[in-house]
Length: 160
Image 1 (cartoon, rainbow, N blue to C red):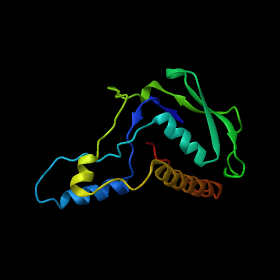
Image 2 (image 1 turned 180 degrees about the vertical axis):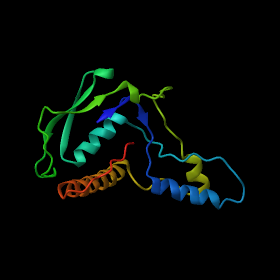
Image 3 (image 1 turned 30 degrees about the vertical axis):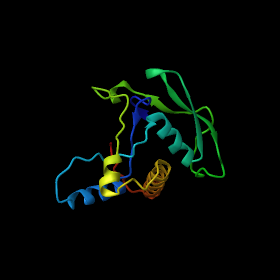
């Protein structure tokens, strides 16, 4: 997994919560400015670490800057998918400067207090719940694609 600046801190929220907020905005009688955010931050590194844990993989990060790597520290065989062929010591995260934002912002954090006060809105989905959903969805897609390939079908890869 090639990444940019994993030290960057982001305010990540679930689309389901953001859409609910947008729906509430559409029903306002007077236009106002609102911030759609969770009010909580996590680093990209921590997001990766939590995602790996959902797969039963414990990572350790070594190095700094563009030399930083995410290395498999251990694998929980009770939680990990049997198809995972990783082993401790494998590097699965590397930094590629091409993925740095041209005008990098180290920290993004929104204040949703106005939305809570005026609309009664606050995010319902925790970061860990969102990560669990994302990992489960991606794992299901990966399993489906593996089955298709093994059955002789061509699989087009999304490149995001």
